[in-house]
Length: 118
Figure 1 (spheres, rainbow, N blue to C red):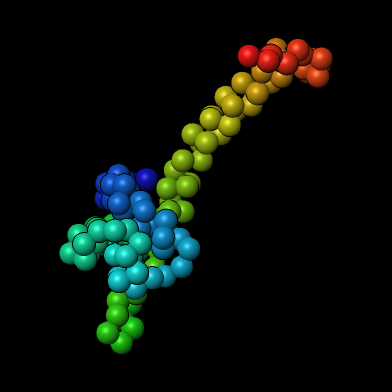
Figure 2 (tube, helix red, strand yellow):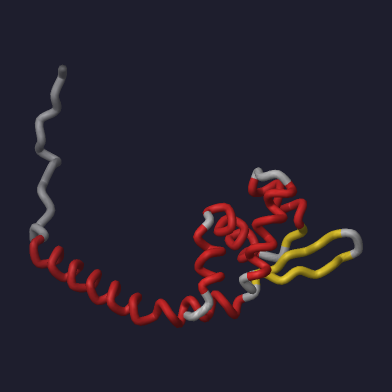
């Protein structure tokens, strides 16, 4: 992954929320403003950063601007992360096997435990 603007754009939590909203479906700016709880100017600034990074596209629909997620940069991020995901998965698999080896063979029987009347 060579384009740092995608990483920079996704570093902001508000922009990640916007990307999450657009993952569901394209949305007009007003809906994004309402869902994020930000002001319209602040939301527009975040959308501009996402658009400049190539993460979202905008189309005019009468008087509204409708934003949609562009999957290409996300696919590039996914491809870049693939080797790391393999590393994480193998580490998690090894941890799972180790936990399986150390787990008690039979669950404890709590049905006979005395009940406290305090």
